[in-house]
Amino acid sequence: MREYCILIIKYFSAKYYFCLIVIAGFYFSSTLNVKGQDVPYSQFVASGIYLNPALVGSNICPRVKLFHREQWTSIPRAYSNTHVMFDWHSYRIDSGLGFSYKNDSQGDGLLQSHHIRASYSKPIKLSDRWSMRAGIYAAYALRQLNWNKLEFVDQLDPNHGFIHNTQVLTPEETNIHYPDFGSGITFNYNNKLYTGFSINRLFRPEINYYDHMSERLNMKFSGHLGYVIPLTDNWQHDRDWEKNATLTPNILFEKQGYFYQVTGGFYFSRDPVFAGVWARHAFENMDAIVFNLGFQQPKYKVGYSYDFTISPLTARSSGGSHEISLTWYLSCPEPPDTRYQPMDCPCPPSFLK
Image (tube, rainbow, N blue to C red):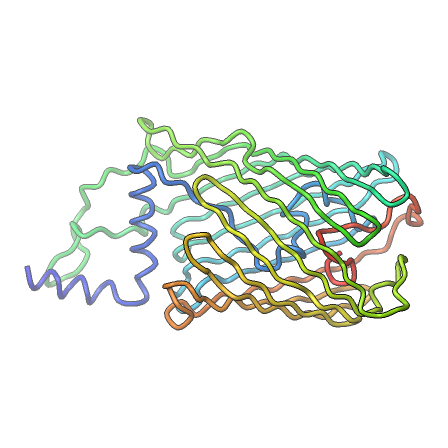
């Protein structure tokens, strides 16, 4: 028995910790009905298209966004996410349109997911000060489990390592396909107050690895709110307002199944730079303090954030998380429509459009 314990310690050193976590998570998700949560972006206000489908086309002119997140970097290949988004406002149908592709990789490709989404939004002017947008999305998703990368204790030999066949049954399905739908709505008051609400996984798609089980993804509910505080007397409601200094407190509430999370903080913006500080709380415990810094020019924007872990996992053991965002602003095919001002998340368009 002692030899097996030593062998387990030897083979499951630090670089294998995450594989053990994934194996345990896969086992418990199959037996205890535990569901996974969607990726939480630290730069949630800059990922507006992902946060709320109503924000598709809110910049009026076309734009391309690229997000990449590396989670818990001290655990090699723990979790990485790449997201590409493209959206614009179509004057022919007076609506916003967008497409996106998202890839999640866990445990060095042990578990992969792909998500292709098409989104639509409709802007509505309510009054001189109030406007709103309503949006929907439809998506195709694929989850791939690389069963051959999994290693179980019954495969261990005291002298030669993993040489035996496991007695764990191979799932009937290692590639799971499912449709996904969602909707959202946003409101803008006088280009100062921004708020919205969205629902993802609207019909709770099935994710069954074994035929005798019935597992479904939980719906995700998100609510966001922010207010722009001008720091100069010459602040104006026009396309050049981002050149003035502003302070924008924001809050994001997310619920998925039994998982609750609140992220609150503020951004400071003064063209061409912006910076922010956030606190993310998962109700049961504080998760992380997030620091964000970025730079914007007329044709592009770059943002970087670092999550300093303050949960029991700690920043030293996890290494924290890194996230980078890139946005390219393309030329408008037609002159901007004066009926609709650029509207994004609950934040000023200077750094979040």
